Image 1 (cartoon, rainbow, N blue to C red):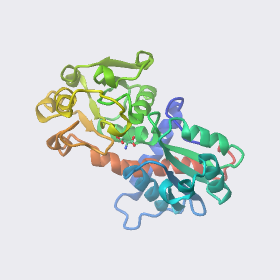
Image 2: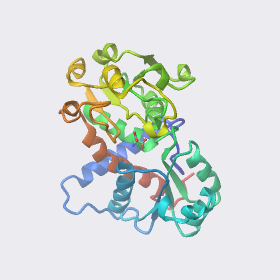
Image 3: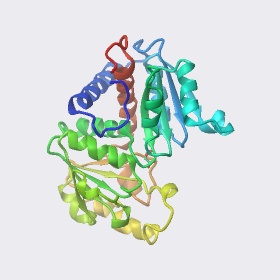
Image 4: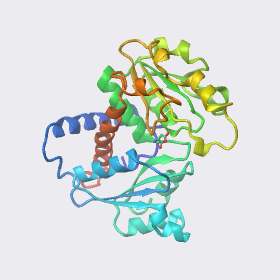
Length: 311
Ligand code: ASP
């Protein structure tokens, strides 16, 4: 694997290999006082974030550090981007300075692919840490890791994804990866928050959350992405919450074994009630924990070894 840009096109063997590596890393580090492996010593990882982030940026940094890579964080606001430097020039600068891997988050869909293209000649790997409304592949991988841990093999499992699918790179990455792993995905959203062309996705679409929940092995709640909304997509937050929020009463419709996921940041009271987010069926902090191991696994698959098979 040279880059990780999307889950669309990520084959099942590669995805499972990353998930298995993440499991192995998690087991290896469990209970260790010193969580440090020498695997990526001498490798340099740069995180380049043009959008806000807590979980993704921090977990990539921890992942790199636990594998002994040198990790450097660049945020657009404090770099030469603030002086008007283009994404291309910034990327080439980071590669020339010695980055083995650039982990990029950008508001434009397709930015990570462009970066990979510009860095083709350099040998620097690119990881997409979220590009606009397009993809967030490591989120989907950590969601799959969490679901596998709770439910076992995902083949035939039913996952319901709820909310602002239109603006969600998490939903897109999950739809592709879950389909590749054999799960059945149902999207539940108001018609205004579904993308054009959703009929072509490997999913079932519904607008009725109550009827979708009893059959779900897992439900993934999405944040309402107000920062990407230019216009009215639903009447009021209260009405959205009544129709699409996972409140306590509604959560009782789920089977007992069902897992509740949320990629964070959560808008408690809007898309998910606090009592549901903090209940044992919710795996939201496990998602964050697994995020570190999954990102370690991704960096391992991209950077470990002599680079001879990295294409
Ligand atoms: N943290 C996720 C993302 O960056 C989900 C969200 O922001 O709602 O896409």
